Image 1: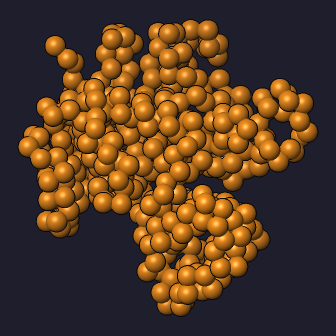
Image 2: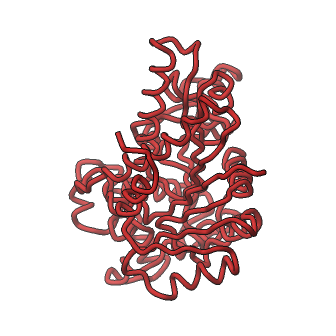
Amino acid sequence: MKSNKIIFFLGAGFSKDAGGPIQNEIIQNILSSDFYEHFSDNEDVVKTIDEFKEFLRKELLLSDEMFSKIALEDVFTPIDRCISQGLSLGSYSAKSLMDLREKLHLLMARSIQYGVDFRGHNKTYITKFADYINSIAKQRIANPELDGIGIITTNWDILLDNSLYDLTRYESQILCEGDTLHGPISVVDYCCYISSLDNDPFIKPGLLALGRNGYNIKYLKLHGSMNWLHCPLCQRMYVKFGEKTMFETKYCKYCKSNYNLGNKAASIRLRGNLILPTFLKDLSNIQIRLIWQNAGIELSEATKVVFIGYSLPAADFEIRQLLSRFIRKDAKIEVVFHPTAKTEEIDRYRIFFGDRQFTEKRMTVGEYIDSLFSDTPLKPR
Protein backbone atom coordinates (compact mmCIF):
# COMPACT_ATOMS: atom_id res chain seq x y z
CA MET A 1 0.00 0.00 0.00
CA LYS A 2 1.30 3.43 -0.94
CA SER A 3 1.92 5.84 1.91
CA ASN A 4 0.22 9.22 2.05
CA LYS A 5 2.17 12.20 0.76
CA ILE A 6 1.07 15.81 0.55
CA ILE A 7 2.61 18.36 -1.80
CA PHE A 8 1.98 22.06 -1.29
CA PHE A 9 2.11 24.06 -4.52
CA LEU A 10 2.64 27.74 -3.75
CA GLY A 11 2.16 30.72 -6.06
CA ALA A 12 2.73 34.44 -5.66
CA GLY A 13 -0.47 34.79 -3.65
CA PHE A 14 1.13 32.80 -0.82
CA SER A 15 3.52 35.68 -0.05
CA LYS A 16 1.16 38.56 -0.88
CA ASP A 17 -0.03 39.17 2.69
CA ALA A 18 3.64 39.32 3.75
CA GLY A 19 4.33 42.04 1.18
CA GLY A 20 5.39 39.93 -1.79
CA PRO A 21 4.08 41.53 -4.99
CA ILE A 22 2.04 39.42 -7.35
CA GLN A 23 3.14 39.55 -10.98
CA ASN A 24 1.16 42.59 -12.14
CA GLU A 25 2.38 44.56 -9.12
CA ILE A 26 6.10 44.13 -9.85
CA ILE A 27 6.17 46.78 -12.58
CA GLN A 28 3.84 48.99 -10.55
CA ASN A 29 6.40 48.92 -7.73
CA ILE A 30 9.31 49.70 -10.07
CA LEU A 31 7.56 52.67 -11.66
CA SER A 32 6.17 54.14 -8.44
CA SER A 33 7.58 57.36 -7.01
CA ASP A 34 7.94 55.69 -3.59
CA PHE A 35 10.16 52.97 -5.08
CA TYR A 36 12.30 55.54 -6.89
CA GLU A 37 12.66 57.56 -3.72
CA HIS A 38 13.49 54.51 -1.62
CA PHE A 39 16.41 53.58 -3.88
CA SER A 40 17.40 57.15 -4.77
CA ASP A 41 20.82 56.70 -3.16
CA ASN A 42 21.53 53.57 -5.24
CA GLU A 43 22.89 54.88 -8.53
CA ASP A 44 22.65 51.54 -10.34
CA VAL A 45 18.96 51.11 -9.44
CA VAL A 46 18.08 54.68 -10.46
CA LYS A 47 19.88 54.34 -13.80
CA THR A 48 18.14 51.05 -14.52
CA ILE A 49 14.71 52.51 -13.73
CA ASP A 50 15.39 55.35 -16.16
CA GLU A 51 16.63 52.93 -18.84
CA PHE A 52 13.58 50.73 -18.34
CA LYS A 53 11.23 53.69 -18.82
CA GLU A 54 13.13 54.71 -21.93
CA PHE A 55 12.83 51.15 -23.32
CA LEU A 56 9.06 51.21 -22.75
CA ARG A 57 8.73 54.59 -24.47
CA LYS A 58 11.02 54.10 -27.47
CA GLU A 59 10.85 50.38 -28.23
CA LEU A 60 7.37 49.41 -27.01
CA LEU A 61 5.87 52.84 -27.82
CA LEU A 62 4.08 53.16 -24.48
CA SER A 63 3.07 56.47 -22.98
CA ASP A 64 3.89 57.06 -19.32
CA GLU A 65 0.20 56.63 -18.46
CA MET A 66 0.28 53.09 -19.86
CA PHE A 67 3.42 51.91 -18.01
CA SER A 68 1.65 50.31 -15.05
CA LYS A 69 -0.78 48.42 -17.30
CA ILE A 70 1.72 46.43 -19.33
CA ALA A 71 2.09 42.73 -18.58
CA LEU A 72 5.54 41.40 -17.71
CA GLU A 73 5.23 38.79 -20.47
CA ASP A 74 4.85 41.56 -23.04
CA VAL A 75 8.12 43.10 -21.84
CA PHE A 76 10.27 40.00 -21.63
CA THR A 77 8.91 37.81 -24.44
CA PRO A 78 10.19 40.04 -27.29
CA ILE A 79 13.49 40.50 -25.45
CA ASP A 80 13.99 36.76 -24.95
CA ARG A 81 12.89 35.88 -28.49
CA CYS A 82 15.42 38.31 -29.97
CA ILE A 83 18.20 37.08 -27.68
CA SER A 84 17.52 33.41 -28.53
CA GLN A 85 17.62 34.13 -32.27
CA GLY A 86 20.43 36.72 -32.21
CA LEU A 87 18.09 39.47 -33.44
CA SER A 88 17.99 43.18 -32.70
CA LEU A 89 15.03 45.07 -31.25
CA GLY A 90 14.85 48.69 -32.27
CA SER A 91 18.09 50.37 -31.19
CA TYR A 92 19.10 47.33 -29.10
CA SER A 93 21.41 44.65 -30.48
CA ALA A 94 21.09 41.08 -29.21
CA LYS A 95 24.07 41.69 -26.91
CA SER A 96 22.66 44.93 -25.52
CA LEU A 97 19.34 43.15 -24.97
CA MET A 98 21.17 40.58 -22.85
CA ASP A 99 22.65 43.39 -20.78
CA LEU A 100 19.23 45.03 -20.44
CA ARG A 101 17.67 41.73 -19.44
CA GLU A 102 20.23 41.26 -16.66
CA LYS A 103 19.55 44.77 -15.36
CA LEU A 104 15.79 44.27 -15.42
CA HIS A 105 16.32 40.91 -13.76
CA LEU A 106 17.91 42.69 -10.78
CA LEU A 107 15.34 45.47 -10.84
CA MET A 108 12.50 42.98 -10.49
CA ALA A 109 14.28 41.39 -7.54
CA ARG A 110 14.53 44.87 -5.99
CA SER A 111 10.78 45.22 -6.47
CA ILE A 112 10.20 42.02 -4.51
CA GLN A 113 12.66 43.15 -1.85
CA TYR A 114 10.82 46.47 -1.62
CA GLY A 115 7.49 44.76 -1.04
CA VAL A 116 8.73 42.14 1.42
CA ASP A 117 11.32 44.06 3.45
CA PHE A 118 10.18 47.65 3.51
CA ARG A 119 6.42 47.70 3.77
CA GLY A 120 6.05 46.33 7.28
CA HIS A 121 3.66 43.45 6.54
CA ASN A 122 3.08 40.70 9.09
CA LYS A 123 5.01 37.54 8.20
CA THR A 124 3.93 35.42 11.16
CA TYR A 125 1.81 33.07 9.05
CA ILE A 126 4.88 32.08 7.01
CA THR A 127 6.78 31.14 10.17
CA LYS A 128 3.79 29.07 11.30
CA PHE A 129 3.63 27.30 7.95
CA ALA A 130 7.35 26.49 8.23
CA ASP A 131 6.67 25.05 11.70
CA TYR A 132 3.96 22.83 10.24
CA ILE A 133 6.14 21.58 7.39
CA ASN A 134 9.10 20.97 9.71
CA SER A 135 6.97 19.08 12.23
CA ILE A 136 5.97 16.57 9.57
CA ALA A 137 9.35 16.35 7.83
CA LYS A 138 11.24 15.63 11.08
CA GLN A 139 9.18 12.48 11.61
CA ARG A 140 11.62 10.92 9.16
CA ILE A 141 14.21 10.74 11.95
CA ALA A 142 12.21 7.99 13.63
CA ASN A 143 11.14 6.40 10.35
CA PRO A 144 13.58 6.98 7.46
CA GLU A 145 11.10 5.43 5.00
CA LEU A 146 8.55 8.14 5.75
CA ASP A 147 8.51 10.75 2.99
CA GLY A 148 5.25 12.51 3.63
CA ILE A 149 5.61 16.13 2.58
CA GLY A 150 7.16 18.49 0.03
CA ILE A 151 6.80 22.01 -1.36
CA ILE A 152 6.82 23.22 -4.94
CA THR A 153 6.69 26.93 -5.68
CA THR A 154 6.90 29.47 -8.48
CA ASN A 155 7.99 32.20 -6.06
CA TRP A 156 11.38 33.92 -6.01
CA ASP A 157 11.20 35.39 -2.52
CA ILE A 158 13.02 33.70 0.37
CA LEU A 159 10.63 34.30 3.26
CA LEU A 160 9.75 30.62 3.62
CA ASP A 161 13.32 29.54 2.78
CA ASN A 162 14.73 31.48 5.71
CA SER A 163 12.11 30.20 8.15
CA LEU A 164 12.73 26.59 7.11
CA TYR A 165 16.50 27.11 7.31
CA ASP A 166 16.26 28.49 10.85
CA LEU A 167 14.27 25.44 11.93
CA THR A 168 16.50 22.83 10.28
CA ARG A 169 19.64 24.50 11.59
CA TYR A 170 18.17 24.53 15.09
CA GLU A 171 17.26 20.86 14.81
CA SER A 172 20.74 20.01 13.48
CA GLN A 173 22.42 21.64 16.47
CA ILE A 174 20.21 19.66 18.82
CA LEU A 175 20.84 16.40 17.00
CA CYS A 176 24.57 17.04 16.83
CA GLU A 177 24.80 18.07 20.49
CA GLY A 178 27.33 20.76 19.74
CA ASP A 179 28.97 22.53 16.82
CA THR A 180 30.32 19.43 15.11
CA LEU A 181 28.53 18.18 12.02
CA HIS A 182 29.79 14.62 12.28
CA GLY A 183 26.40 13.52 13.57
CA PRO A 184 22.87 13.93 12.16
CA ILE A 185 22.03 17.10 10.27
CA SER A 186 18.80 18.44 8.77
CA VAL A 187 18.57 20.66 5.70
CA VAL A 188 16.43 22.63 3.33
CA ASP A 189 16.66 20.51 0.18
CA TYR A 190 16.33 22.40 -3.11
CA CYS A 191 16.58 19.05 -4.92
CA CYS A 192 19.48 20.07 -7.14
CA TYR A 193 23.27 20.24 -6.84
CA ILE A 194 24.13 23.16 -4.53
CA SER A 195 27.21 24.73 -2.94
CA SER A 196 27.38 27.18 -0.06
CA LEU A 197 28.34 30.71 -1.07
CA ASP A 198 30.00 31.37 2.29
CA ASN A 199 31.00 27.88 3.48
CA ASP A 200 27.90 27.43 5.63
CA PRO A 201 28.15 23.93 7.19
CA PHE A 202 24.35 23.64 7.26
CA ILE A 203 24.00 23.89 3.48
CA LYS A 204 24.27 20.26 2.41
CA PRO A 205 22.52 17.94 -0.08
CA GLY A 206 19.34 16.31 1.13
CA LEU A 207 20.70 12.80 0.58
CA LEU A 208 23.65 13.59 2.84
CA ALA A 209 21.27 14.63 5.61
CA LEU A 210 19.30 11.39 5.24
CA GLY A 211 22.55 9.41 5.24
CA ARG A 212 23.45 11.00 8.58
CA ASN A 213 20.14 10.05 10.18
CA GLY A 214 18.73 13.55 9.86
CA TYR A 215 15.97 14.75 7.58
CA ASN A 216 15.42 17.02 4.58
CA ILE A 217 12.64 19.43 3.68
CA LYS A 218 12.11 19.27 -0.06
CA TYR A 219 11.54 22.77 -1.42
CA LEU A 220 11.50 22.94 -5.21
CA LYS A 221 11.59 26.46 -6.69
CA LEU A 222 10.61 26.10 -10.34
CA HIS A 223 11.44 29.68 -11.28
CA GLY A 224 14.64 30.12 -9.28
CA SER A 225 15.30 32.05 -6.10
CA MET A 226 16.69 35.34 -4.83
CA ASN A 227 19.26 33.51 -2.69
CA TRP A 228 20.75 31.56 -5.61
CA LEU A 229 23.66 32.43 -7.85
CA HIS A 230 24.98 30.22 -10.64
CA CYS A 231 28.30 29.95 -12.43
CA PRO A 232 27.91 30.29 -16.23
CA LEU A 233 30.96 28.06 -16.74
CA CYS A 234 30.37 25.01 -14.52
CA GLN A 235 26.68 25.76 -13.73
CA ARG A 236 27.14 25.15 -10.02
CA MET A 237 24.37 26.66 -7.90
CA TYR A 238 25.51 28.73 -4.92
CA VAL A 239 23.15 29.28 -2.00
CA LYS A 240 23.08 31.63 0.95
CA PHE A 241 20.27 31.97 3.47
CA GLY A 242 19.14 35.14 5.20
CA GLU A 243 20.09 37.45 2.31
CA LYS A 244 19.32 38.18 -1.34
CA THR A 245 22.57 36.91 -2.77
CA MET A 246 21.81 37.95 -6.33
CA PHE A 247 22.70 41.54 -5.43
CA GLU A 248 26.26 40.50 -4.56
CA THR A 249 29.20 40.33 -6.97
CA LYS A 250 30.85 36.95 -6.50
CA TYR A 251 32.96 34.55 -8.56
CA CYS A 252 33.03 30.76 -8.75
CA LYS A 253 35.72 29.59 -6.36
CA TYR A 254 35.91 26.15 -7.96
CA CYS A 255 36.41 27.36 -11.53
CA LYS A 256 38.89 29.96 -10.31
CA SER A 257 40.99 27.19 -8.79
CA ASN A 258 40.43 24.52 -11.44
CA TYR A 259 41.25 26.74 -14.41
CA ASN A 260 43.69 29.10 -12.72
CA LEU A 261 41.54 32.12 -13.56
CA GLY A 262 41.93 35.60 -12.12
CA ASN A 263 39.99 36.95 -9.17
CA LYS A 264 37.54 38.79 -11.42
CA ALA A 265 37.32 36.73 -14.59
CA ALA A 266 34.06 37.64 -16.35
CA SER A 267 33.49 34.03 -17.41
CA ILE A 268 33.01 32.89 -13.81
CA ARG A 269 31.12 35.85 -12.34
CA LEU A 270 28.12 34.40 -10.58
CA ARG A 271 24.72 35.46 -11.85
CA GLY A 272 21.19 35.42 -10.54
CA ASN A 273 19.07 32.45 -11.45
CA LEU A 274 15.49 33.65 -11.85
CA ILE A 275 13.17 32.38 -14.56
CA LEU A 276 11.60 35.57 -15.86
CA PRO A 277 7.92 35.98 -16.74
CA THR A 278 7.86 35.29 -20.45
CA PHE A 279 6.13 32.98 -22.89
CA LEU A 280 9.61 31.64 -23.72
CA LYS A 281 10.91 30.57 -20.34
CA ASP A 282 14.55 29.49 -20.45
CA LEU A 283 14.78 26.20 -18.58
CA SER A 284 18.15 25.23 -20.04
CA ASN A 285 20.17 25.59 -16.83
CA ILE A 286 21.07 22.09 -15.67
CA GLN A 287 20.11 22.77 -12.03
CA ILE A 288 16.73 24.21 -13.04
CA ARG A 289 16.08 21.17 -15.23
CA LEU A 290 16.93 18.91 -12.29
CA ILE A 291 14.46 20.78 -10.08
CA TRP A 292 11.70 20.36 -12.67
CA GLN A 293 12.46 16.65 -13.00
CA ASN A 294 12.32 16.19 -9.25
CA ALA A 295 9.11 18.24 -9.08
CA GLY A 296 7.55 15.72 -11.45
CA ILE A 297 8.67 12.85 -9.23
CA GLU A 298 7.27 14.54 -6.12
CA LEU A 299 3.91 15.12 -7.83
CA SER A 300 3.80 11.53 -9.05
CA GLU A 301 4.14 10.32 -5.45
CA ALA A 302 1.56 12.72 -4.00
CA THR A 303 -1.75 11.41 -2.72
CA LYS A 304 -2.86 15.02 -2.15
CA VAL A 305 -1.80 18.28 -3.80
CA VAL A 306 -2.71 21.58 -2.16
CA PHE A 307 -2.54 24.78 -4.21
CA ILE A 308 -2.11 28.04 -2.31
CA GLY A 309 -1.95 31.43 -4.00
CA TYR A 310 -1.54 30.04 -7.51
CA SER A 311 -4.01 31.06 -10.23
CA LEU A 312 -3.15 28.35 -12.80
CA PRO A 313 -2.84 30.86 -15.67
CA ALA A 314 -3.01 29.65 -19.27
CA ALA A 315 0.37 31.31 -19.93
CA ASP A 316 2.11 28.86 -17.58
CA PHE A 317 1.91 26.05 -20.10
CA GLU A 318 5.12 24.39 -18.82
CA ILE A 319 3.61 24.09 -15.35
CA ARG A 320 0.24 22.99 -16.68
CA GLN A 321 2.03 20.24 -18.60
CA LEU A 322 3.96 19.28 -15.46
CA LEU A 323 0.73 18.97 -13.48
CA SER A 324 -1.06 17.08 -16.26
CA ARG A 325 1.75 14.57 -16.74
CA PHE A 326 2.58 13.74 -13.16
CA ILE A 327 -0.39 14.19 -10.82
CA ARG A 328 -2.04 10.81 -10.39
CA LYS A 329 -5.67 10.23 -11.28
CA ASP A 330 -6.44 9.20 -7.69
CA ALA A 331 -4.71 12.18 -6.11
CA LYS A 332 -6.88 14.55 -4.09
CA ILE A 333 -6.80 18.19 -5.17
CA GLU A 334 -7.32 20.98 -2.66
CA VAL A 335 -7.23 24.65 -3.67
CA VAL A 336 -7.17 27.59 -1.29
CA PHE A 337 -9.02 30.48 -2.91
CA HIS A 338 -9.15 33.99 -1.53
CA PRO A 339 -12.65 34.81 -0.19
CA THR A 340 -13.09 37.25 -3.09
CA ALA A 341 -12.19 34.69 -5.79
CA LYS A 342 -14.40 34.76 -8.87
CA THR A 343 -16.32 31.77 -10.19
CA GLU A 344 -14.16 31.59 -13.33
CA GLU A 345 -11.01 31.18 -11.18
CA ILE A 346 -12.53 28.17 -9.44
CA ASP A 347 -13.91 26.71 -12.68
CA ARG A 348 -10.42 26.94 -14.23
CA TYR A 349 -9.16 24.48 -11.61
CA ARG A 350 -12.23 22.23 -11.74
CA ILE A 351 -12.03 21.85 -15.51
CA PHE A 352 -8.26 21.32 -15.50
CA PHE A 353 -8.39 18.50 -12.93
CA GLY A 354 -11.56 16.89 -14.25
CA ASP A 355 -13.08 14.12 -12.15
CA ARG A 356 -10.38 14.04 -9.48
CA GLN A 357 -11.60 14.52 -5.93
CA PHE A 358 -11.64 18.32 -5.63
CA THR A 359 -11.98 20.53 -2.55
CA GLU A 360 -12.13 24.31 -2.59
CA LYS A 361 -11.49 26.42 0.48
CA ARG A 362 -12.34 30.11 0.52
CA MET A 363 -10.11 31.76 3.10
CA THR A 364 -6.97 33.83 3.44
CA VAL A 365 -3.61 32.09 3.47
CA GLY A 366 -3.20 32.88 7.17
CA GLU A 367 -6.61 31.39 7.98
CA TYR A 368 -5.77 28.25 6.04
CA ILE A 369 -2.46 27.80 7.88
CA ASP A 370 -4.24 28.22 11.20
CA SER A 371 -6.64 25.48 10.11
CA LEU A 372 -3.72 23.10 9.54
CA PHE A 373 -2.93 23.18 13.24
CA SER A 374 -6.57 22.80 14.28
CA ASP A 375 -6.87 19.74 12.03
CA THR A 376 -3.78 18.00 13.51
CA PRO A 377 -2.25 17.50 16.96
CA LEU A 378 0.73 19.64 15.89
CA LYS A 379 1.17 23.03 17.55
CA PRO A 380 3.23 25.97 16.34
CA ARG A 381 6.32 26.77 18.37
